[in-house]
Structure formats: C-alpha cells, structure tokens
Amino acid sequence: MKTSYNFLHKSVLLKESIFYLDIEEKKKGIWVDATLGLGGHSKEILKRIKEDSKVIGIDCDEESLKIAISILKDFKNFIPVKGNFKSIDVILKQLDINEIDGILYDLGVSSMHLEKAERGFSFLKEGRLDMRLDKDTELTAFDIVNYYKESEIAQIIKEFGEERYYKRIAHEIVKSRPINTTKELLEVIKKVKKIKEKINPATRVFQALRIAVNNELENLKVSIEKSIKLLKKGGRIVIISFHSLEDRIIKNFFNKESKDCICENKKLPCVCGHKKTINVLTEKPVVPMADEIKENPRARSAKLRAAEKII
Image (cartoon, rainbow, N blue to C red; front, side, top):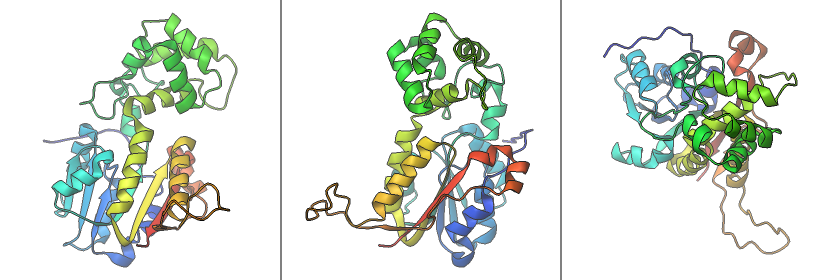
C-alpha cells in the first residue's frame, strides 16, 4: 500500500540516542525501537548496523506503522510489529528472540498525531475527542469527558495533568455536556482558566486525557520492567520522555535497579534480596541543545535517560 504524509517530522535527540545505544561500537546485534513512530530513530540505527543484525520496530498506531514501513522499505533487516510495548516480552517471543542488545523509547505523541485533526489530540485543531494511539482500543477522550463521574474526571486531571484547577474544570465539563470536539472542550476549560499562562490553558487537561485514554504511565512501568530482563549483559536502554510524570517513573526505576538493596530502613539488615542490574549512564537527563530546539520546538521538553545492563 502506498502511504504518504505532508507534515514535517523530526526525531528528537537523534544523535544522543545513537550514542547511548552504543550502535557505532557494536554494529552487530538486535535492537528494539519500542515506539517506532515514523521510523526516524530506527532509520539511523539501520544505517549503522550490519546486514545480519536486526531492528524490531513496535508501534500500536497502524497509521504510523504503515508510514514507517514505507520509509524503511529498503532495509531488509527491519521487522515491523503492530503492538503495544507493554507486551514486549510476548512480541519478541513470537519472533523467537530471547535477548536484545538495546531498546529505545521515544514517548508521547508524534507530529502526525497533533497535525491530524481527526485524531483529536490537539486543541489547536477542530476534531472529535478521540486521542487513541491504537484505534483498535475502545476508550476515547469523548467517553471520559461525557460519561465519567465528575470525581473521576477531576482525579484524572489532577493526577495526569497536575492541574491546580482540576475540581473546577471537572465541574464545568460535567455541567457543559455533551462535549463533542476538541475546540468545544477548549472553550469549557477557558471558562475556568481565565488567567494568562505561558502554555495554553488546555495543555494539562489534554495531556491528562491522552494519558488516561492510552494508559500510558502504567504501560511504561510494565514495559521497562520487562525490557531490562530482555537485555543482554552490556545491553543499553534509552528512554526519551516529554513530561515530569514519565521522567519520574524512569528516574525512580533506574535508581531502584542501580542499587543492591532497596529496603526502606537501611539501619536494619537487608531483607529485600534485590540485586543491582544496571549502571545508569546519565547522572542527569540529557536535554536538547539550543540549535535543536530552534529547529524543532517540540524538542524543548525532551529528556533522555540511559542505562546499561550489568548482569
């Protein structure tokens, strides 16, 4: 199937991702792009590895997957898979792969999701409230906004959006039902948030709804736990996040896995039995240089963390 797209897509922290995956040094092995998107990171990996090596590209968005397949069609050692990275162990088992040399996560939504009004991700474009990354799933932002209890909506906005006006916004949403489109929801939020901020008043609410629709944070926790077990000794994990909730999960996970003991009371003998599995390669998250942010404003909030498997 011929697939085309008419928007500009730039992979964030591309050089840094390749560096921390240690591609140039290894060149031979199996790498997983757990968030394939339009294939920008995978393409750079494929250009550098040997022909008998592989890149497994996973994405739950069929539209993105088709575009990536078209872009990467000349690489015979590229294996595309439609699936959710929370099932990475199952996906690799089906491919008869037991261990990998590296895995990359580039979290969040792509330019394509934001540019296509019908996907319902952006408050800048009029579209039905959808926000599903995987169209085969049932829950949409429309369902949450129109059918969830006020207390449930408030909790989503508070927890996933870190929005201070979560109660008032949830109340206004319920009072304004039905709300069918992104612009309608934007207007509801603006009734509550009349003060000027650096970001659009709807930003945190839309983020919260998207995270809830796609179960993003829980899927991330599940996937990175599994990915560490799948890495070979010396294998690398690289994760690019775009907001504090994701980065917190990654930071806490790396901190835990880089210690031999995770008992709360350090004064008592260790009873947890936990063994250190990784060395953290990024003491602080790597952020884009000013030139990259100027060229690609979406990169401004990106943070990269990396670690290496040691056992």
